[in-house]
Length: 206
Image (cartoon, rainbow, N blue to C red; front, side, top):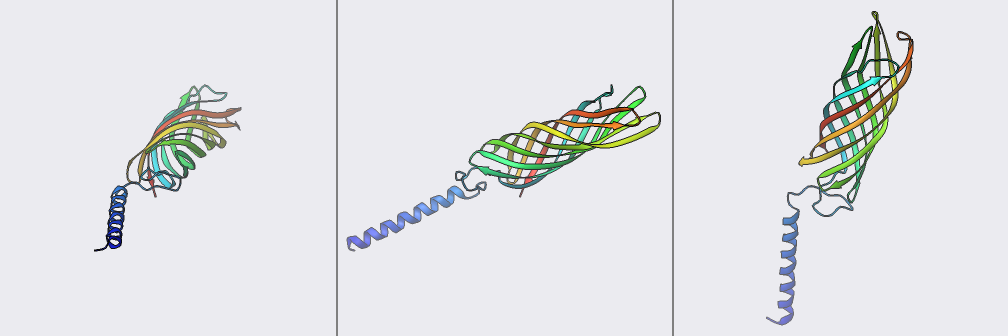
């Protein structure tokens, strides 16, 4: 066998070996996106999940301090560039936060948020800040009379999220929510609800 043929066979064998090694390295790994290192966990794309937490706060111009459990669903979309993750998320929550003080009872039956998110990922662990629009119902009851207003406001918070299985992640999050004041006839005052919320959630990534 001449040297040219032998050299060609050696090059072909080397190429096959490198291709097999690359396939082994990528088999069974988490998906990755453009601008991501090979085999890095990807946060990019849409997701849907649920959450459960606890809210506590106070009502402006009233001594009541409604608190209680809250739970709901969230959905969002992430973009990723290297370790930097940016996204949008919306959620809607049912809330049991309420308190009665003297003749007044205030409750917050539901609320929601629409927020931006920005964070830094350490592979499958994401640390982020979030903020945006908040809205929800504030209900006042006194002497058998009840009145409800839907108030808009803002929210800010921080959180951490960890990918623990293919397509699944779990998060812990704190939000401060300010539902701005509105005038209530039954109380004769301008009332709003400001509260903290800590919650845990699970997301499925599509």
